[in-house]
Image (tube, each protein chain N blue to C red):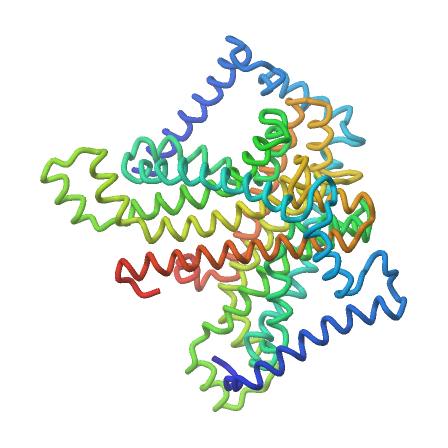
Length: 262
Length: 261
């Protein structure tokens, strides 16, 4: 806490001034002819192109159709990552031998950027839905695994001791003690995963897809249609924001239900 | 004791994986060499790119090109991002003015800038620097900003009461107190920069590791794909390690607190 906080009015005014400057400079650059309109369309051009793309197809589909095929891949990839990563993380948190075996493998794989899997993904699963899904999986998997693992490792030892004293088996311990106790950590991991998965999806579609928003942007780039590229960026940004807001709300509601402060 | 055990189990796992690799590809042929390279394929690809070159250059040329681009982009991005973050953390007015613009740009993933960068600047180095700048800028701003906001209030008040001049205040209180968070930001920036560069080179480049991957994918050359991936991984590891060493040197006094963040 450094300066005195500004009043709401001051904040609003400054914010509008900042946005105004940004959009003003952008528009001026183009209108004054300093930058050719073909390379830097005005904000208005981009907005009208965005609206136009909602109904007019580009690169084989309209923007909503491209978004739909992106979302399909995205949901498959993230769900796959969560359904493999979370159970594996919990098991690594419970069985020491599994942890010892898997930890060095993941330590090594961690440094290979998800996007570097693109060539193998294309080779193994093609460019339809399989290849991109594998890239999304590679991006979204680590946070699922790590957070489930951390959650399981930091469970109150008294709970585990009590369960062991009562002779609870491995499966029931994991499902009824480790899983519920690690839910807060897992939920955070899922939110991080969802964000990373979305980023990986964009990368995958730029390189190995034949539909989707990323594909649309690459096609627009090849056709030197800057407004379409920018409209694609806006669509990706908006969709990413929407995903983040939804997951934050989900996280908050889970925390509330469990009596934790948000 | 447990460290020792972990090392042994780790080595055993590695040996098992290598054995499995040989077993599945060379000995049994369960995985065809068109899908995943056998150790011999990998070795011949490695020898080829080291001696005769692939995709217009030897491995060393591609790797140094990529690393130099990341280092330059990273420095440009952090040299602009960290001061901006510190300033936004310090001045509520600056935060109020810049934040809305920042919020507008932030949700766009760095990779989504690639087509625009190619459109504006072509396939050369300038486009790569632009994309890296976007990737590394955001984490360095956010974390520097958060670093200033977490400084203890009494520290600032004490400095004010003693009439510390502005410049000394920034260099002796603001920057050191925010340093652990700044370094967290730098680490995230570096990772984002490396990933983004590889992606940008995969989309289109004239030289670089991403180009090697791209060519190998088009030639359906699994051995070379593996060489490219391993190079990306090893260099990513080396750069992260160097940054961690720098952090350790700079923040030795704060390591216990810093590591918990």
